[in-house]
Length: 330
Ligand SMILES: [Zn+2]
Image: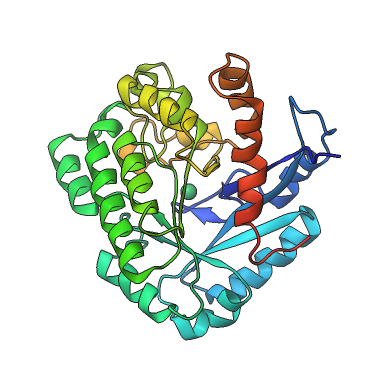
């Protein structure tokens, strides 16, 4: 019997992010795993989740705590993505040896998450024996900084101007060069720019260890959504792109450029977001997505014939399952 279900390789859950607790924890996902095996609304079979180093605890202690909670409250496969702030390769080695990924960011300097391109290359050198997969959030910090100086953050729509596609394209190009140079596995998260997607397609010809994901929000919405009422609730990074980019991204999905679909689920309560609506630079960003990752694409792109059901199954079950072969619990 063919397996029915989906994986979401990119879920922020059970952590503090942007200084606030996320809206949900591992136990909240259990009901998704208990869905009947219906191909229109299948059960969740596993997730990729993040452990970010905190100032008050070692990364491995935080990992142990979250891993126990996930085993107890979620009970399905988890692929762990670790974000070190100060931790060294030596400290992380036991976890990386078991198959955890690294997750690095080329932006978010203020939050302490930023890694320079040089630093990313250094991780690749130091992990040349393990070949630990590195997930990278690609937005060139200098371009983001300059654009943010140019456009102040008064309305939700400004977000798209402050974090333009060229920032993503620049960082994706730089990280791909490093991956090819070091022949080191890299996974580019939440690709929202068609130029970036084409750069990835090209780089894959030089090195097969490159994979990437895009998310429903970049396929189904454009930046005009940020002019709607309560648009501050939809702010996420990268921001929604212009309609021509969204359209091209769907074409690239049809052409099979993306390995997987993943949601970048990062949910905060609306009341919390509303309390920052007049102070947009401080608003905790991120949108919910793990519940609707499969169904939103099924309803909009499969039913309309833009992609086949098999393509959706490849993007949400077959391919992510292969990426989840590292460290898992069940
Ligand atoms: Zn994310």
